[in-house]
Length: 91
Figure 1 (cartoon, rainbow, N blue to C red):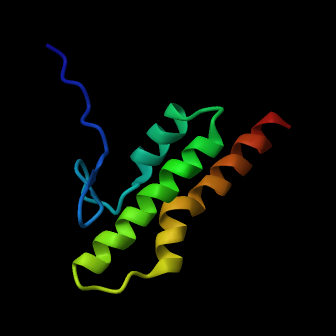
Figure 2 (tube, one colour):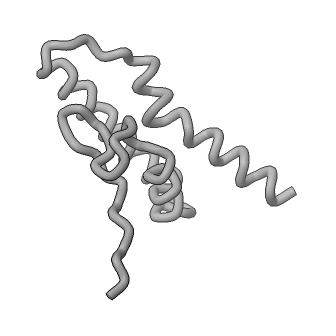
């Protein structure tokens, strides 16, 4: 029997990857999300923005102050880099 790779999903409230323990979305999660939402970047942005909002809420519930610029970079910042890479490959 062939073992399937475990998905890179978030564990709340810490928002760490269940598989590799990196801050979610980790690199493998970003690749999986980009593939899953291929051609639907607006839907991906809404999904990630909603996830970021939940991470902010979870951080407050833990009694901590969220680092909003860092969370924005982590959840949404990689999307613009991924789109630029994809565009440059088409040229």
